[in-house]
Image (cartoon, rainbow, N blue to C red; front, side, top):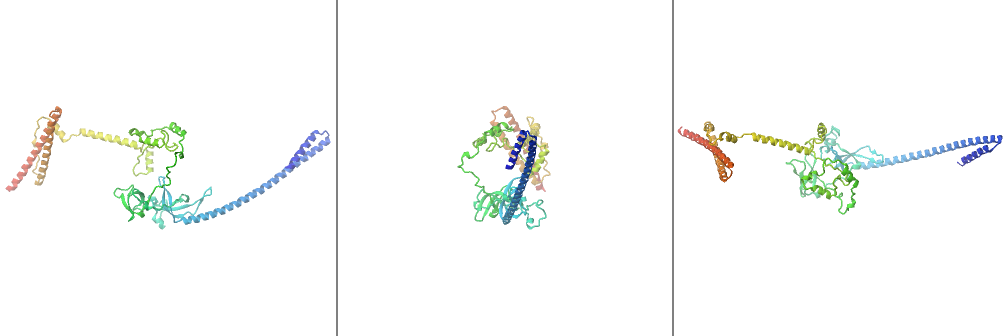
Length: 482
């Protein structure tokens, strides 16, 4: 670079000398010198560029060699790490653990499981972490799809893992495994939540009613079970106690400043931006508002969303009643058939519909009762319409000639009971008439009419009793004569 600066300075001096010179011969020599300097500068620049390119190639070659060397070292380290990880994972096969399981409705729960095998291939993430997959079998299955297939364990199952009704093992990541939950039977007590092994090898949730540590048995009330077999006795080995973790609970010594403050901007945004279709706590017009008071005590500001930052829901979630025993896909198909009606499964709409249906049933029943004519109404309107009862002995007489002696005795007992009951009713009506003698004329007239009706019915029963007595006496006379 120093030579280039000198050449540039000499070229500048020659150009000035050319302009200052008046001699033509001298100017011609200076122009020749200028051309030589320009050519020298060009050659010098070309040589410098070639040298720079050679230096760059040497640097690139060194970088490539270094990168290749580091890649080989990293590959060797990765192979060693994979070998160590594989040995460690192979030692884990056969051990117990707690593995996650995703249910068909999307919930993820952890259950005790046994590691039965390891996948041969391991996935290397972009950050260099290695993800190993394990196949686990659950030791406390709560659903049929978690129950290990007995034929798969023997190697004789004719179905693959997708078509078999039972489990061929769940593939889980090594990073999602937890420690095995060891059953602690010493903490079993009343109302303790447990999983109990039922007859179909499924573990059902229940609560302990009593524990017998001598015989190591527990009486458990199962959830979602029939009333007949709801309470059963189980051995300790067929139980898995479930206890809530105490480590997540916060201490009482924590100050209120440990919790994040509610953002005022969120409060204003929630209050004035959201279009609330239903007032939160609207049901409290039927109560004393204890729900809103409790929420205010816990720090809730009316008009904001739920949650510590006020970013939760504002509109209450409406309760829905889905068809019993039907899947969610079936329910969604019903909603699609109803053109996406949001109130199709609404509990409030269902209650209103049931209320209207019950009102219609009650109205029809009332109409039937008002139009129905019973025997006593017919007697009151047709027979007892006059002041004097008309005795029609002909139609009231029953033919007892075709009855046996046993049936005559039964009829006689029935008629005697009816006569005693009718006499008691007449006595009650007479007491009422005597009690309301000084009352209104309307009440007295109704009671007198009722007394006449009861008296007429009593006379009919007495007449029927006389016919029965005559028939029985005639049969006794005939048997005595013959």
